[in-house]
Length: 151
Image (tube, rainbow, N blue to C red; front, side, top):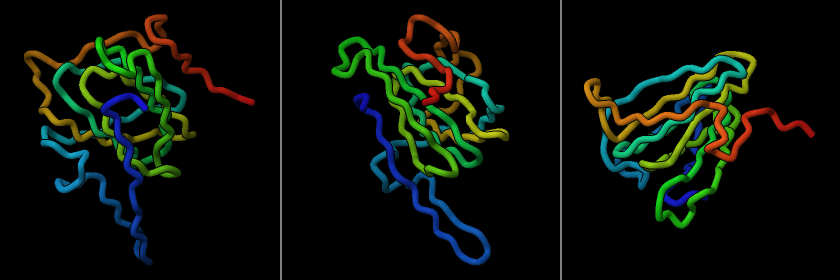
């Protein structure tokens, strides 16, 4: 696992009306502070990535569909520099994924319908000076191929 990345299995609490699922609590180790909450959507087969933040910690929960979320540690001096982590998250695997600053990340919709990911970042978005650093989704700077792996 890339240093600083954490995964928490989330618990669905079902009843005859539906279910409730806590996504992040202030008494969990994954919480340090609150910036904002937003939802991002990705269509089937589409890749959104790559990007990282210098300041912000991201916390992803996929609430509709399934996503393949991929992390790459390109941080200078990190003991896990060069590592790639792949996570399948969503309705079939409800998890909270904490992504520390400096870790490149992207995701791909792998459901037949639109996938929705809630992000609870540590910082609010700065419109004048965004903490966003990007690479193309298909780049040779990251050792990862977004193609489906059949077999």
